[in-house]
Length: 107
Image (cartoon, rainbow, N blue to C red):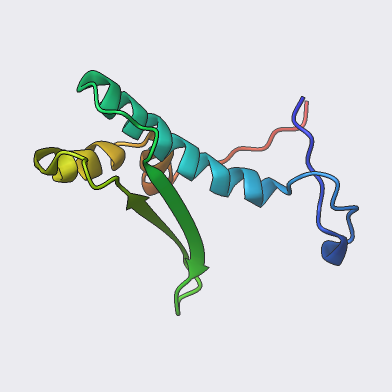
């Protein structure tokens, strides 16, 4: 069971993350998964890799996800672009970009 609530500002108790927070977290967690897999394949330590996720809205009110990857100074230069490409393969990102269809059925 996943607990969810709304903020006090939105009429909830603020006792758990709201659904949108879980959605936002899934983007960062997916990126982290791909980064971890990439580094494990190449035996690159992940201890000092940082991911900062920022969510904003542009002038068209679209949600903009910005992921900033903080790499340690000793991260191999030859793998930096490849890491960005691997991270872009995130399944959550791809699902969003594919404009999923939502169906709601009463049963």
